[in-house]
Image (cartoon, rainbow, N blue to C red; front, top):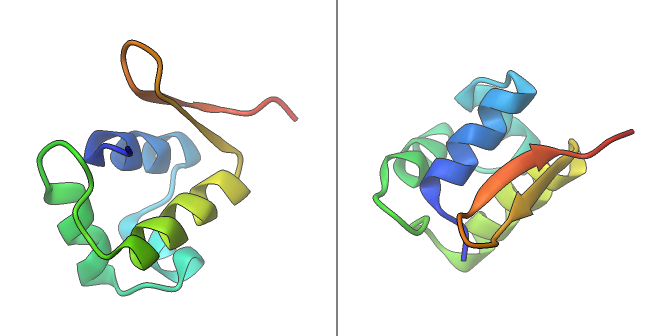
Length: 76
């Protein structure tokens, strides 16, 4: 389960704006806006959530889902 706050935090770590994330994931800008505005778990089609998650992971983001879900940048 990915939370909307994780998407926002991941984008902030990468210093990407919403448009850059949309282009990188191959989804529309309104889709990113809706995903980031949702409360709790990201809302959207499974396909679009997967595309965004893969784009962020490809840029170096790791999603953590321990006691408190979060994000971090992988060491290169």
